[in-house]
Image (cartoon, rainbow, N blue to C red; front, side):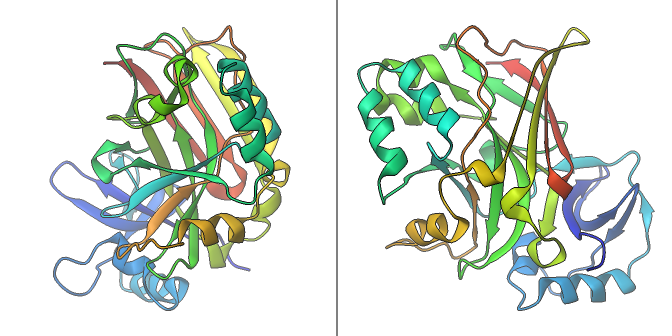
Length: 287
């Protein structure tokens, strides 16, 4: 298998464009047809071959000086919850009244699925993630994110951060949309690695690091093989009576959750590394 193919949306300040990223070099992909976007490339019958063809006609340029944008254009972002034992335990700790709900959904045939973000609520690599002004207990949630086309084919992977307000959801599970869905509550990136260019996703390691004032204050690790659900299972449930004409990104849940004494603060730097997908880094702001 050749090198992993990483697709990204980048900006040089004057315009944004889709590119293939190889180390510190980018290959702008001149997508044919007016209005073509990243989602159109992902809809190709063979995205790897399509990228190879476009790369061969591309003039490479350095990555330095470019800004990473979120790796989506028209797609919704959905998320699965309580897919790891640690997530189940954390959710039960934060909400005594609803503890049995989280315990049951972990083993239920039907998973927890919810709409996490629309494109304008998503930030890319090195962008700022937001903690709510009305929350006191905020955490990052590192998640392998599946990239699906309109036919729900698994065409790629990216790193995701499902920023969450645990005190709001813990007060009442019906507040989940407010705890999870708000501006800059979702980070994705750096790019999308095409599924056909990598292997072993079911066992990739996941690492979370949080730095405050130059010192690491939290570090945690898990691996995708600790997830209680299979990719096909989550995709199947997501597609029941639901359509995604531009494709969809599906966050698969978290297995790394800081304990109840920890909360994010403005200025914190959150980094998530997953297998061959690279590292997604974001700085925290409030309100």
